[in-house]
Length: 345
Image (tube, rainbow, N blue to C red; front, side):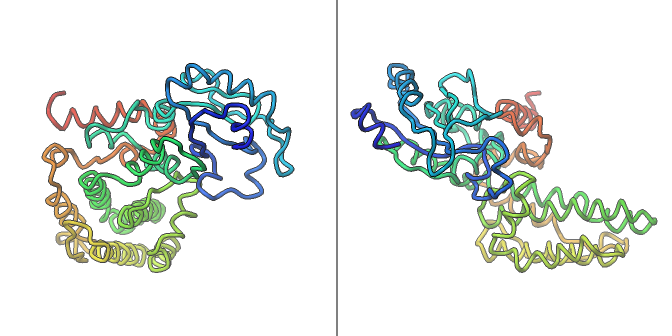
């Protein structure tokens, strides 16, 4: 691609990258991935003025001169996800797209520029942030794309702590239900709640290690690559396969305790010593999730962030695909929660 652009448009400044949706961006593609939307793909990112003056000419040149195949794979292939008609974004029958940095941000995060407030981060799902920061940048003449990715590489400190606290609060809300459902003979309900808590604990592990978590299809695959996975996975497996609620509850409590320890190992501000204890006077052994969440909240320095509710970010209080595939809707929901917390609605 670079020789073609150098010959046809030698003065053009641009960035070239493979970002956005696609299992290959996350490094998870395999033979099955090639059954749809699959072929040589690239984004060419132009400055706003260059896109307006040269974008169409660049795409016309690519249509005419791009090789019919690269490394044996056709460059023209069908796709159900090409952003046809998206402002600031050009695409064709091939896999090369021409766009601006603003249009990339708008498509992936629902914003036109980097967040001006830490609260804006609550509307960004980890999956979307991951697809912007995990792909490969091949060239970046202005350095703006690389700078953007550096700023999005991880949450601001206080938003990170809020997410951690919110995740512990989720666990605190249901930690005794595994035993309560099991105690009345509802083993199916106990197993279902146990599986939810396993998922929440796995999300915690990503947050503690400062790694964005992908969406459901690749969640377990990415978890297996965490440093803590060899220590946590046996406990999760035991909890998910336990035949009795007492065993299930015990494995979950041990896993939660280990993640509490990991917070100290990873020097998480506000980390509180984990403790397994009886749930009031009931016969259920649970983690001190409320104390851990309170310690994290106490370490938050921004008063605006510290006033936010335990719901956390949008992908913590909603797992709806309808929501999480619409960046603008995610931002609206997150800001609605923040306004409610401030008492303005």
